[in-house]
Structures are given as structure tokens and as C-alpha cells.
Length: 252
Ligand code: ADP
Ligand code: MG
Image 1 (cartoon, helix red, strand yellow):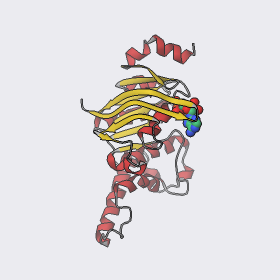
Image 2 (cartoon, helix red, strand yellow):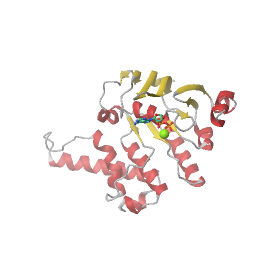
Image 3 (spheres, helix red, strand yellow):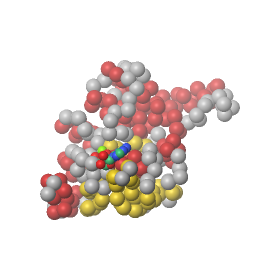
Image 4 (cartoon, helix red, strand yellow):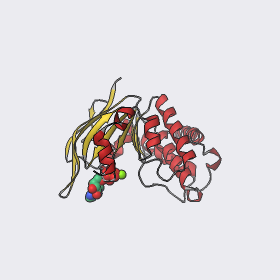
């Protein structure tokens, strides 16, 4: 399988603290790679670097053979990388549909009229954007709530709304930071099915998650971090049996 993302010798310091320490891994086209590890292991910091939110202290990130280190964060969605955050990033006063459409800004003209687009073209583009947003709302099961204010939705539905927002940009790589946190068993199972469908449709996923059922069910491969360093990599079965991983989780 073709490699989509290559992370090489990646490190990140915060003041004197090394949060990520010489980490290497690859994400292949159309796979789900899970990044796991105890709290503070450096998982969110890795996602923040891979999504261009913060620069690495050392190391390289290549996406579709392009060196990403000098690419500004706002270009990432256009190049094919989108993400969700560990904490919800929603606009409570906007409708669910509007919240999802935020994810498309990077794909369309930043200012419709300044680039000389005719009104007809602008309206057509707006309609296409709305249709795509509706398609994703349907896929995540939120169609009936499209015109509700996001602030009125329960937590689990907002999590799904954020996935729709990340998917409307039609990414090649979707980064997820603990998407199942705070969800019940049924919601988590539904979300797992959705991630598998996203993968079947050709989008690769880099998944940070604590829910081991979800990880073991849907991950093709797993990378394990502990205190900033990679301590293991393998299939779900290999990782479950790895003594170093077990020790890291038990804190011994
Ligand atoms: P995880 O997501 O695996 O729980 P994080 O990547 O959030 O871990 O954090 C890894 C380490 O880096 C932790 O020790 C954390 O306190 C530290 N860290 C993360 N972000 C910052 C920051 N912005 N400033 C200072 N330290 C940070
Ligand atoms: Mg985290």
C-alpha cells in the first residue's frame, strides 16, 4: 500500500519538557492507524504537529511526498488533512448545518466576490457546499437536526457533528483526538462503524483513542507512545500481547 504520511524522528519540547521524543511512523493510504498510550504520553502533541497546529522541535513530516514543516496550518485542509480536537470546538449560536459548513471554507474561494466570481457561480458554489454538508449530516445521522442550534445538542451528537465538519473537506487523511471520549457504548459502536465506512471510501485515519474495544476492532495497526517515545508498533493482536505495552499501562 502507498504511504500517505511519513513522520520521521519527530520531537517536541515545551520549555524544558520533552513531550515527544524521536518518534517515527507511517500512515498508509486507506488504513486506520491508532496512536495509543497513557495520559501525557504525547499523543495530542503528535496530532497537533501532524495537523500543523504547532511546529516540531525536530524531525520531519511528509504528506503525499510533500515536506509539511513549512506549510502554514490553514493550508492543511486544502492539501487533504483535517482533524477533530480532544475538546469540542463548536459554535453554539450557529446551526448544525452552519457548523459543518465551516469545514469547507478552506476548499472554496476565501472571498467569493474579490476573485471576480459571478453571482451565479457564487450561488452555485454555495449550493454545492450545502449539498455536501447535508450529505455528511445524513451519514453521521444528524439530518433532522440540521437547522437546530448546535448549543441545543447533547454532547454525543456534537462529537458526530465535528466528524461531519472534518469530512466535508473530503480529506485524504482524517486525524481524530479521542472521538469516543464521553460517549456511551452504543454511540461508540456506531462511531466505529462510521470510521470503517470512511476508510472503505479511501480516507486514511490517524486515531487517538482510549476506548480499547474501538481500537482493537477497527485499527489496522497500532503505535504505542509512553512518555513521549514510541515503545511498540504492530497489529492489534501483537500490541495486546506486548509486555512493554502492558507494563506502560499498568504503570510498572
Ligand atoms: P496525551 O495527549 O498523550 O495525553 P499530550 O500530548 O497532551 O499527551 O501531552 C504530552 C506532554 O506534553 C505532557 O507532559 C503535557 O503536560 C505536555 N504538554 C502538552 N502541551 C503542552 C503545552 N502547550 N505546554 C506545555 N506542556 C505541554
Ligand atoms: Mg491528548
